[in-house]
Every structure is written in structure tokens, then in C-alpha cells.
Image (cartoon, rainbow, N blue to C red; front, side, top):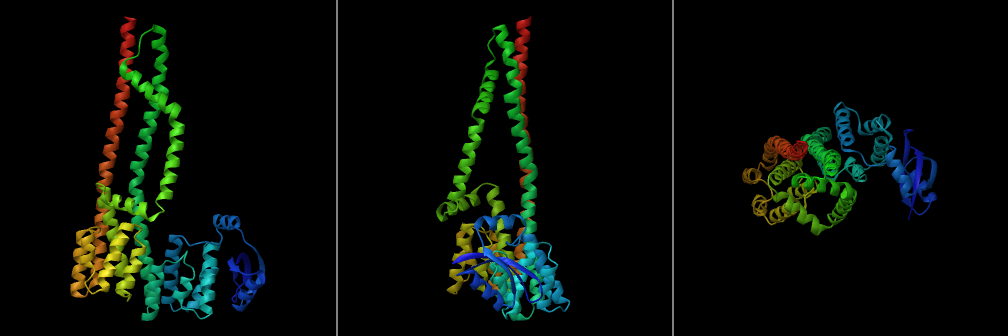
Length: 404
């Protein structure tokens, strides 16, 4: 099968662009015409062309922000009484960029061909996750598509807000650490070497501490570039290794056991799992399907294994909370609320309650982490700079003694 890039006019006059696989250009044209499109051009596609297309805002997966906006916009139009076909047409025509317009146009074409919205979105797996598709399928079955889309947008916004909170909290400590390392390297490689000629001219040996720091500065100057290259190679090798299930599972388990950071990761995973599970259950998704979808959003293989074990336990009628407790991955408060939900048949609402609790605890943990990191980095930087300055002062005092 070959890949072909096409341009065509849809039934509503919208411009369709994309890449499709087929035996020949004629077969692709026939497929487009069968869907009611008028073909403008078809040409062989290459991987390089695909890369440029993505970079220039062409055909590609929707970003998280674009997906959130699309869900909320579609929900608003459906709630206002707009029919699905017309809503999708307006979204394709009024899209903020070509990528969003092309995705929504392809979704509309499949809906016009008789596919349910969930099936049409499922044909775009790079843009719409299994979670979103599952929620929309449940919403279509329950007759509350607009409300479901609004809840999906809210869920995506919460996920984005949590990710942004973690990233924002780490920006200041990261900048402070870079500034500290840069200042120390500058002192070692630029300031201290200025004293070497003074001691050489007077035939006096350098103080031991100054000589040690000069040696460190020389090592940084000579071997620093090689060290950076080695670190980059090591990082690339680690990234490749983490794509393998075994190393990735070991790394994810280690991440959950680290002091402070491990606890924060458990809170984040607990909030993400509880929010997703609760949203799916209150929208009518069966428990086993909900667990499978929630497993996809965790991003930690150890946590995914725990959810898989909980699903196996639930399948045999033993409940999932006890299985989650045995894995000791998720916070105990989450397990307690899920166990209570199973007992009272209120698993969905209590899962959402647990999500609220752990999102708040994540926020507090982030504040504490930043409160610890900033003073720690500041103290370490101050101690290092103080040591270098003390060595400089000792060298200056030695020269003064020689002058006297």
C-alpha cells in the first residue's frame, strides 16, 4: 500500500486535505468520490512532506488545548439546539488553524456517512483518546451528548491545569539551579585563573584550597564539552532504554519510591485515576471498561499494573479496592474512598470526591516541595560561592604577606 496526499472539496464546499493509503491514486480518488468529495489533486506522500506539514500547521493530531476548545465549542452548539452536522461544519470552517479544520472536516464526513460521533472520532486516534471516545459513546447512548462533551472539556482542563501547575512550580527552582551552576563555573574558570600570574611572578606556591579550585576550573574548561556530549549521549541511551517495558517498569517503580518526589507522584496518579474513573462511571461506562480507559491515562507502568490487577479482581467479583491496596501504589485515602464507594454503590461520586481531595493534596505537596527546594538550592549555592570567595581572600592575604 502506498501513501498519497490529497486535496478535495467536501459536500459542503469545505477544503479537505490529508494523507491516505491505497493501492493507487485512482483508488484514493474513487474512495473520496464515494464520500461525495470532488478531488482537486492527488500526489505521492513522503515522510519528509508529513514532517513539514506538521511543522507548518497542516494535517496532524490536535493539541490538548485545541481538543479541549473543540469539545467545549461543540457542546455549546449542541446545547443551543444546533444539529451535529451543522455544528461540525461550522467548526471545520471557523477553525483556528488548518490542522483543526482538517480533523473536524474528516469527522464530519464520517458522521454524514452515517457513523455515530464516537465512531467518527475513533477514526482519528491521534487526536481523540480512547477515554474521550468512550465517554462520547456513553453520552450518545444516554441521550446527553452535549452534557458529556462539556464534562470531557472540564476533565481535559483539569488535567491540563494539573500539568501546568507541576511545570510552573518547577520553573523557579530550575532557573535558580542553572544560575547557581553558571555562577560557580564562571568563578572557577574566569575569576580564579587571574591570580595565577601574580603567584608565578613572585615565585610563591598557591594556597592548597586555591590550587584545588584551580584544578577543578581547569578540568571544567578542558573536559566540560566532552562531559556535556557524554551526558547528551547518556540521556539519549536512557530514553531509548525507557521505551522497553522492563527498564520503564523499573524506572516507574523507582520514581514512586523516591523521598518527597515519590509521594508527590502518588498524589498526582491518584488524582488522575480517580477523576477519570469517576467521570467514566457517572456517564454510564461499565466498571471494567472504565478501568481499562483509566489505565491508559496514568503514564506510569507500575500504576497501570495496579489498575490491571484491580480489574482482574473486579472481574472475579472480589472488588477492586482491596486489589489496589495490595499493590501499595495509590494513596491509602483513595483506596479507602473507593472501598466505601463499592460498599455503598456510589463508586462514581466517591471517586470524584477522592479526585478533589488528591488534587488539593497535590497542590499542597507542590507548594511544600518548592518551599524546600528554593532554600536548599540557595544555601548550597551560597556555601559554594562562599568557599570560592574564601579561597580568593586567602590567596590575596598570602600576596599581602609576601609584599610586607
